Structure formats: structure tokens, C-alpha cells
Image 1: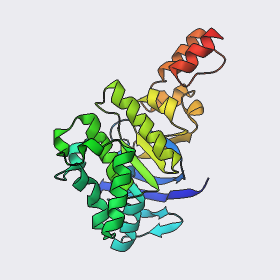
Image 2: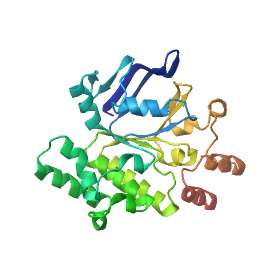
Image 3: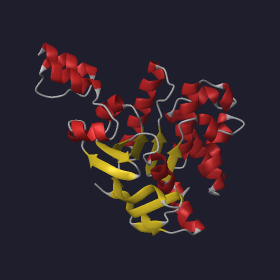
Image 4: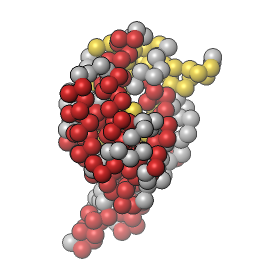
Length: 269
């Protein structure tokens, strides 16, 4: 798997003597689906802000497509174009007068030719079923539609990596399912997806890989089946096993199903 984003011994502190992120070395590959877990204050948000170039490492280095990212504007802009960030609260991210203006804002800031901007906006609108909302005010729309708009914003920038902070927060089941369908579409395009979440059930059935942060350090990095089987690790990091793990244990199943549908099939087999 081709490496797209890499942290090499990266540290960052908001205040002297207290590291928000300490000596982090980790990489993300093309098309990976990565869940990022940890208690509040564990370092997840700082990791995202460094990965997107909002923050600059105080020690260590971030690499994008094997190229070191320094603190110069041109280098940071390369990182920001390649690594999209979708915030938990759409209100923080959305400020366009219409949905079309909102999605075009990022590409326009890159001084991309208008014809190319139109192509990108059309693709993003179609990908997230936003055609009927093109001329609507984003803040007048539902939470589910606003989430889709923030994903369309990111897609229009054509990122290699997309960071999502609690993307399913406050969504009803129908919109949560639509979100997962949209994430699958993005992953199929080779975009690496890194999702910060407190939902271990989502992490279990969705992720190919799990990162756990604890007190500013990367406590664990591995396959979901290994991470969630480690009860001591989960206890230390304030996490619980996914529900299907506990169900499989009670039913003494030979393997833990990833979804409720798989559980039903295994039970009826």
C-alpha cells in the first residue's frame, strides 16, 4: 500500500511542559480506512490539525507523498490541498451563501480555472445528492444535508487523505447509513479516510485499522480484531469492547461478526 501521509517523531505542546502530542510516528496509506480512538484530550484533535497543516510540529516532521512539509506557506498549502479536514460541527466549516458557493470556495482559493471549478462542483454535488440544494442557504438545511455539504467541500479539493471528526455525531439512523455509503464511495476512489470517533461499534465494523491515543501518545496501532481483543489495553485507555464482541463471547461464537447481518447468518448457520 502506497504511503501518503507520515508523521516522523512529531511533538506539539499548547503550553510549556505539557505535550498535547509526544513523539508520534505513524503513517497512512492510499485508500486506508482508519479509526482514531481515545478519550477527550488524548491527542486526536491535535493529530488532525497537524496532519492538515493548521498546526506545525514543534519537533519532528510531517511528510506528504514522501516530501517533508516545513513551515513555509507554499509547503503547508501543498499539505492542506492534499489532506482535507471535516469538522464535527458543520457550522464551524460552512459559511457560503449557497451550497454551490460553499463547495466552490476551496477550489476558487486555489486559483483554479473557472471551468475546472465548475467541473469539481458538479462532481461533488452529484456525488452527495445535493442537486436540489444548489441555490439553497446551507444553514437552512438539515444536519444530515449539512454533513454531506462538508464532505462535498472536501471532495472538491480532490484530497488524497480525508480527516473526519465524529462524522456521525447527531445523525439519525438513515443519515448515518447514508454517511457510511458516502465514505465507501470516497474509499473506492483511493482516498484515505481517517475518522476520529468515540463509537467503538462503528470502528469495529468500518475500519481496517485502529489507532488509540492516550495522554498525547499513540498507545496502539493495529487491526481491529487485535485491538478490541485486548481487554487490558481498552481498560487502560477508557474504552469498551464493541457490542458484537461481547455478544460473540456470550454465544461462544468461533469468530466475532462485523455486522448484525453477519451475526444473524452465523447464528442461523
